[in-house]
Amino acid sequence: MKRPLLILKRIPIANRSRAIDSLDSDMPSDVLPVWFQAGVNIESVEPDHEESHVHVRFGAAAGYSWQMEAIRFLGPQADWQAAGSAFTGNDYLIEQIHESAPGDQRFYRLNGTPVKP
Image (cartoon, rainbow, N blue to C red; front, top):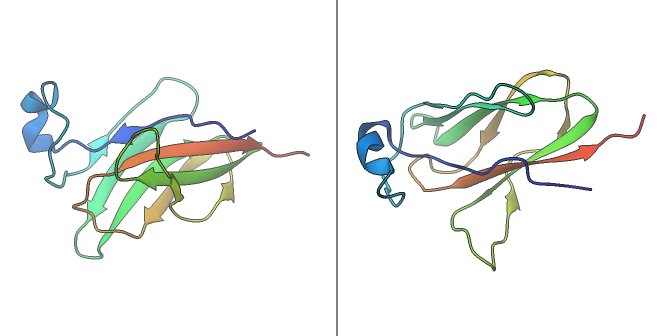
């Protein structure tokens, strides 16, 4: 069974003070570090303006097949699209590259499906 584990919105570093009041900024962000104590963790979302894509780095637990998905807008009609290829976790940090413009607003989620031994 696939299940979303985390949804992340990029907020520009320069606008952190306004981020609490408004999540509608369309400015591209610098590296956005995010840490969790246990479980699945996204370490960073980093736009790469020179290569025109976005790097997403996260911990991939072994025993699961992982698929990163992205969407521009949330809502009842949300149509999440695969962002990169699915891969098997190995208990290490993995970097996925999302081939899309780094300045666009985007939400990310990870779907983990147990791998049968």
